[in-house]
Amino acid sequence: EEDEYELLRKIASQHWGTMRSYFQEAAAAYSMGQRARAGYLSAEGNHYKQLAREADEKASQRIFDVKNKDMHNDVTIDLHSQHVKDAIRLLKLHIQSLASISSIHSLKVITGCGLHGTGRGRIKRA
Image 1 (tube, rainbow, N blue to C red):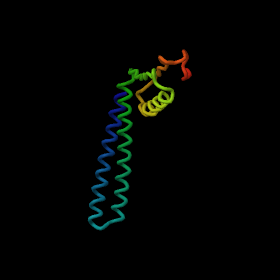
Image 2: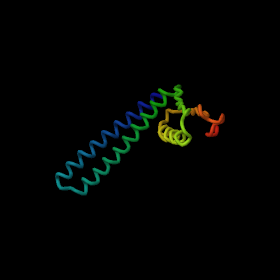
Image 3: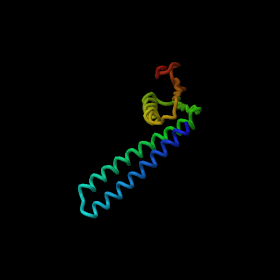
Image 4: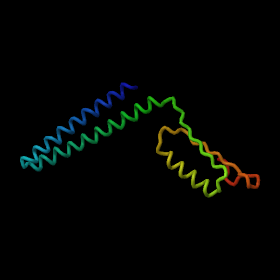
């Protein structure tokens, strides 16, 4: 598992090196007035920059997954004493915020009828 991480980092490093070479060649071609060649070399450099970024992102995600595979990241929010509209707004806000965090496995929401309620909750159970 960590070998895959090392391989991806090595690939990214190679792509970064290739990118630098293309950009250096592009700069040299441009200074010699070879605009078309410089444009081509620059485009190749940008291509390798994208490949390097993708390999770095994959490596980062892979090592994160390996290191955190046994983590149980659960989030609990308590909406007791919230008015219904406020509770719904806060719940939506937390869902939107947590949706982009891949390490969060579950969201537990605590609701209730509150101290001044009629004995039954107004927010229905899931």
